[in-house]
Image (cartoon, helix red, strand yellow):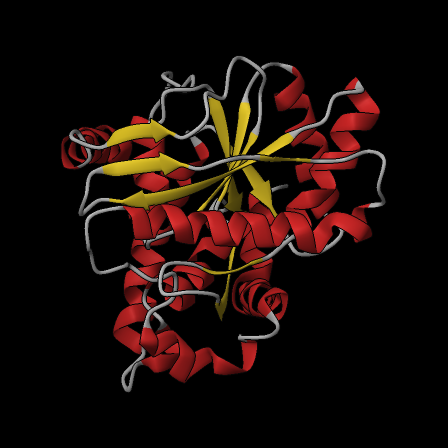
Length: 277
């Protein structure tokens, strides 16, 4: 398992971490191909909380997870929790969920910030995530990305957002090595974190020329791995309520995150500035 920040853990982490370890204690990591010692990028299904929590507690390699930046900041986390956790726009009565978000979100942000995470944004700040990711890879850590979009691909996985593929040329530029992208399917029903066959970035081709090939390989491999398991009901990335309340963002997922950021600035802008002063 990856290195963890053990100093000054928030109280909520001390409570929830043992619970998560217990919940996922039987989950096994299975590799179709031995990943060896070279760091790699692992692209996983989300399966609601099971993907991040299962990998954080059971993945047996040092790693950092890409995490939405809005969930890591005490103020913006309120907007994130209201929309992405409680699906607030789908509620007939919204104020109880806004109140819960105000109370719970700072604790969530503190807890997540003490994990091995890399903050990801959908604006100019996105470059920092790539820079930090390449640094972590050079230091021998894997990068784990839950890259699904809201658009379905198969019964087991949604289409992948492919912005993470920029790690290929950036890592090659720094190291002269071709990063491998491993597909991952997390299934708590079968207690498996199953890692499929990887595909490597090819420096002999432009990124645009291989973007669809790599993305399709990962999507189809995750589907193949899922189909190879005992029959199970997939846990989808997005709840049906999300499509009813936020359906306009199905083809504009970046716009969804911008909406959350803009609401945080509108509702809590002055408080957010004071926190960083």
